Image 1 (cartoon, rainbow over the protein chains, first blue to last red):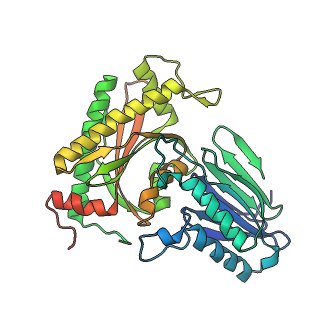
Image 2: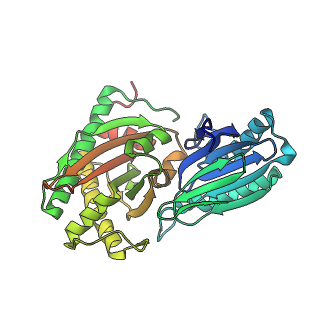
Image 3: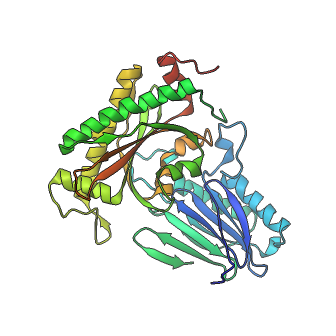
Length: 165
Length: 212
């Protein structure tokens, strides 16, 4: 580990970018999806903590575009390109989208995890960014950290330790 | 509604709501455990997602969360949150089995989970009944949703309905704790998160103006 490297933290419904040797992390992903988009040879990466699938369902007047899959991902791509990443070289990794509560009568709102995964996958496909690896679904929360140096995404779950994708 | 602001009168009313609700819930819990339960003065705050998580702990800290959707005239979300050790303490007290743990070989213990559901039902039911009596607003809790996971994951999952409307939540947070003189003990948080449109109803019911 490089001593001068920093960990950039991304909050809920937030996004940020990072370049090596720094890493980028978001904690406590439940039904939210963490999307990492990166350019491996430029060693630059962006992470978005997506809360909801679709901005069109919002009842808000002032839209928070970091919150939705369909608005935050294009913005993240724009930000990466502005900072030296190349559009054609972009790849993605994703994690999250769990269903935190086991429900007998699952309402649409409570099925938000699977819907988030779907929305992220669809948006990435639209932007022609290949998904290299993912760890999605299930019913446990995740903390993820991406290192643009080796492009590995570390995933930590409770009672399960850490693994890399 | 995009940004929320509360006057000091409105905050007082919400604090009183927390007092009445959690006071009754603490009494119910105290009877259940046959032990004295203390309660702190509720705090009322307007927070964004990250701040909400920080109220309870670090986002990746493990927590036991019992989440209820409030149905009826003033919808919202209610949560009863406990640390893992505290939830275990509670289950041990209630089942009279000092060796109980929430996880057996990393799998959730069914009896413990069921006991927690029941505790959640009783305390949250009491909280809401007290609130409903006070405001004369009809409120009913859904079945409890139990999650044992990271703080961030649990809280945000419980906030899904709210998050489609606003980026800020009003939380009424009341901490209760119990100490029987030994090192063990328990501390829990009741959170009440009214949906934005429910605030108008609550304030009107209690004779407070919503708009200045």
